[in-house]
Amino acid sequence: MAIALRLAARGHEPVVATSHIHRAKVEREGIRFAPLGPHLEPTETALLRRAMDPRRGSEFLIRDLLYPYAKSAVREAMQAFARADLAVTHTVAFGAQLAAEKTGIRWLSGNLAPAGFFSAYDPPVLPPFVWMGRLYALGPFVGGAMRAMGRSVTRRWLAPIRAARAELGLPPDGDPLFETQFSPRGTLALFSPLLGQPQPDWPPKVTVTGFAFYDRQQPEIPPPVGLEEFLDSGDPPIVFALGSAAVFVAGDFYRQSIEAARLLGRRALLLIGDEKVNPIPRPLPPGVGVFTYAPYSQVFPRAAANVHQGGIGTTAVAMRSGRPMLVVPFSHDQPDNARRVTRLGMAQVIPRNAYRARRAAARLEFLLSDPACLARAGEVGLTVEEEDGAEAAARVIDAELAA
Image (spheres, rainbow, N blue to C red):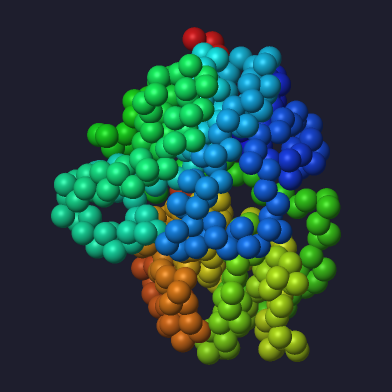
């Protein structure tokens, strides 16, 4: 959305192709919308629970949901490309990548998080192999072994992709996770260079743009009544939030968080999504505020510390806020994002299955009392604040269109 709005301001006519649940948001901004599935409902909690499983979530998402939908997504992508001059695809938009390869449209790939590059020199921490992160200090040999292990495992999932390539008359080879997700024309790495720098084994023509921020109050969601009053009524609270997916499978996260704040004697602000999914015991303890939703850009900068799941969008806003963070990763790229902000000196990590009030309180006490951590968080915030990923991406797109 951020890039589309910047392109529109430059006189282009961008189209955002994605799940139908985002149509109203896209069209409200005056941007054309095109459907590109799979079209999943965020309230399908049983499906979300499988997709966010710490060990098998990524396998389920890719093997069972995205790869089998690739043929249908190709048809939708080709319709979206019908009058387009250029396509920009997401890491897991496998159908759109195949459509770009088939049609020959000018094409740039996009990657939202460093984990998607699978570098042996700066290897990602992947949910099934979190333990390997302790070995990465031994050098690229270990990272290369991790990459080879990942390729070996995911190669078994490729039957739907091979079938789609055959139907399109494309060469049979091509692993969309390790090879064909990257356009030969170039890739937009849409994250801060603080999180990841180009490595010798990255694909050619990668531009690290910085984060492209889009975080607006949605009209269909009423403004949180009493939020500003709560924020103004005392010391900065610890903010607890779980992004747009993990919030549907939070388990006891919020109950443990309330107790952690009590142990610390700190105020707490909880963003819980749907209260039917995450019921909170009433009455609330003193100093605890519970709200279903608020833009993170509104509350994270006013926090003492931010506790979140480590999704790349949430991590970006948390970095820009200049506050220390405690990351509780669930799945996908979240363990890797957590490791990277910890490496910056502004964060601590607790695995989801180990998140308990006393442990969270101890980690938060350290974050809130360590001068070096507080200073580093402020430095990172100032650096990210100066980034303009949307503008940097728009410049690359303009250059590609002019080539």
